[in-house]
Length: 60
Picture (tube, rainbow, N blue to C red):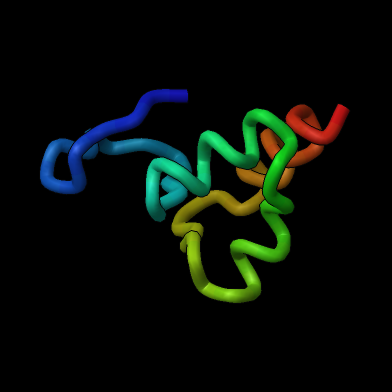
């Protein structure tokens, strides 16, 4: 996982975009990633199976 400025994103399989506070909250278990996604506070692009695998790893 790397945090990058929007214009510096290299080619990758998937991207998750949103406020840094949302990502920190997810990593600390304070904010539900599904809720952020469905409220459109974060967006996902690319290989959604890779993002789902990351989500499951964070939940464990």
